[in-house]
Length: 621
Image 1 (cartoon, rainbow, N blue to C red):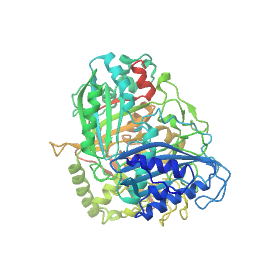
Image 2: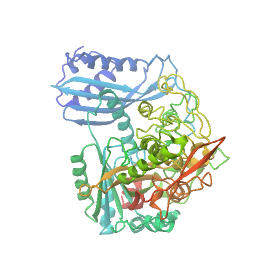
Image 3: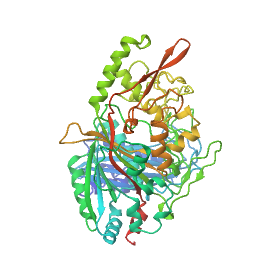
């Protein structure tokens, strides 16, 4: 049967495709919905029907949709029992929930381009490895906490409360504008797939999140004093001053009550959304400062690819046992996400869920020290770190030249390699432990390889990639580096995430979800750096601990280890990096001491990112 549809909008055309073709399991209406001059689109739709044939009882549900002019993007879920062959796998008889994504372009009420993809990795995967992990309420969790906005541009706007009651009502009403994890997670995965296939995104999105300071929470609702975290209660500036951070460059802007985050891939839309949000919050809130960040080819101001290593969250996104928040893609270590990506219990980042087990145990713990309404919320650390790339390059260039001329073991040392040793990665993102002598951009762009390493133990070979699982990519497995020759003890990545240098259970108790983005002043070429953002449930044991006990601790692993030179210069005093080189049958350390710091903390604050329900609660809803 051929149906000549009378629908007019692109959204109506795509909706008709879902209803009359896919849900009805009927190919007949395709002739009236797909342009006959678009055979590839017709073939793609036939592939979806073939997928559905393996799930006779399957229900295809639309979770989200976005449309702009002639483009429509859908996120769907196919739920049903697999009783027929699917994606090369025979019947499993398992109840599954497959994420399905669709991108369509419509012209003259006909589909002229269609690309549809589904995640079938779970079909042939191991049975329910996430079954014992908690179901995370993604509809309540703000989307920059997890999975992170991951947009090209970000605005950070600080507000002061001018009228407490009006501010509560404005924030409660603004809850409907806040992007949730349930919205951001599938779109990030969809757009990643679309970029891989087409090199561009067919539609764009703009996301908003909000966070509140401790004084603001005390003014707006009861129970804020139940937060036990001393860092959050005191605020960033006094805590950093007590820790010995040099605050001579700190901005004199008064501490903000509310922080608004707006993310977009388009600068004009970003600023338009900031203006709209400020208007919605105006009854009771006044903007006092704003910063704009933009990704520069994925690099931070010193020129290094940023955000490579992030922990994976344990937990599930639906009642179906195999729907983990972090796909398990390591074929030899199922307790990792991608190879080298440790899985961390969600309570380390989001209140109300199990947190990391104590050392020597395997049972996750329930973290206390917060009011009941903190569930599905997270502490947000915001710091503006000014960076001086000119001074950084001056130091690495002059020091590399001196060492190459005076140290036989470092003959031929270049500025690029010394900079890579300071960070632990080449500017491309390739880790020095896997590429010790020269950059390897191919490894850097392989998400199954760029993080697959440990420090004390060699990694296992992965073999060839299979659907849903990583392969070795043709790279030799990462060797061990217990002496810190390939990746120095004081390299930034080894300081900030020591991996197996210490007990893994202890290392994972201090991880953060980092969401920073570079910024650059439009009026002062010297004013550039990183708008640092991190989410955690203990500012004391995560952000502050990493800053003080790992990055700036010169004796973390060894007496002559030195400090991280990327972040530790924010502290007062001289700083030393321990460059370890072979010496006879052992290792010796060459101390490197910059004359001037190239990183300064110039502003920031500690905030709480509440759940959607808690935001509405602020206005009495």
